[in-house]
Image (cartoon, rainbow, N blue to C red; front, side, top):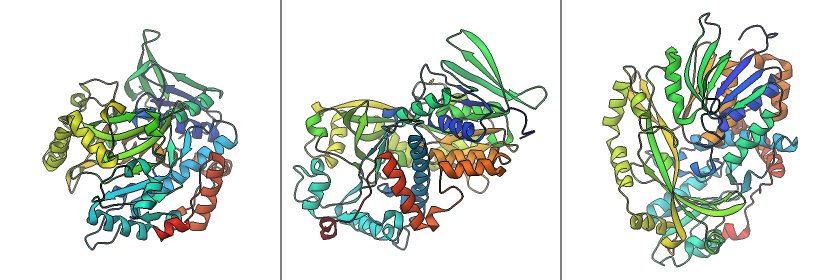
Length: 505
């Protein structure tokens, strides 16, 4: 991206986990660069990165059964679980380096077992096959399985309390799981960034337009600074659009060819939250079930112990909903403003082909409190409504793509859209998102800063921060376990082992 002796100017739109991660990696590998981070709200990490706007799961494929679908022949496809696991290991390496170097505090992550919990003979058989398939890989070899009720009472006492004997249940467990406060982490990263020369964070400032300068050599990011009550412009050699649901609208403003054909399908969520410590103290795990038929992956039901602002609470959900907002703090016009000639047909095709999803969302919106309590009682039979309150979770925008052979398709992952010259990158999509933030941002560096990654000093720095950089952990099991052990030691996370009790189960 030009003469390396010229100081580069980077603008990052959105002060969430993605921009914070990119900012730190850029500053560590290109110390002379100038970085401006623009956030439309008064504080950073108030949208997708906010603690209660996401599940806080360190997604490692350990308990998320939607990552391991059953093939037509009955075998288990482990490819996505292995991929997500490696990506989370990369994030943990980077976070551990930052903590070890005293650049950020380490209290954003808490050791929390990851458990899959199923009901009925069919799903029990699926889970048992899943465990056997995954234990063949070093990263999952400590996964335990049990349908023994006495074992399950030790793993999830709250969920087994007063459970009818007629309920056929089973679970798998990995001790290595984690709960992550992405709000804390984002703010720690931004605080460290703000202490570096050449970095500016501007809050209460909304990006309105992104377009090329008259010379075509720079990008102009036009903003409205609500604090100063004036318009502002920022010039940049590179623009990263990490604005959550708003990223699609801003990507469209750039008018780069790669932005054509993309649309967005907004899905909101609700949590049931319990702060009654008598109840909370009986549950110490993230427990994932199986998604309902027609439900999007982000709606997989789970009962999680969380630690936010020093307090332990339980979370159950999410219950899906629909809103035309692209952000929790957005406008009801967001969805309509995203429509255009380039994506209207793909959007209509997705609506036609995903009728079951639309039907599911409508049913969720119409759920009454008693019905939500019934869903909770499948996990926690003794649940009482007085202990739980309903809270609005974050807003997600799922990707709609215009595929040449398939037409409009709905995607549930994350995707980075790059301009051909690498001067613009936009992050679209949702889960697993924050857990794989470091992997995603490394992809941004590779696509937008190839000349930077050719420098020996930069490669050395990346290997220092992320010891596995350039090596596939899926192909090097012993290295993965060695790196995991080091990351967990620094971050205060547990390493699992198979106990006699678990073997008996």
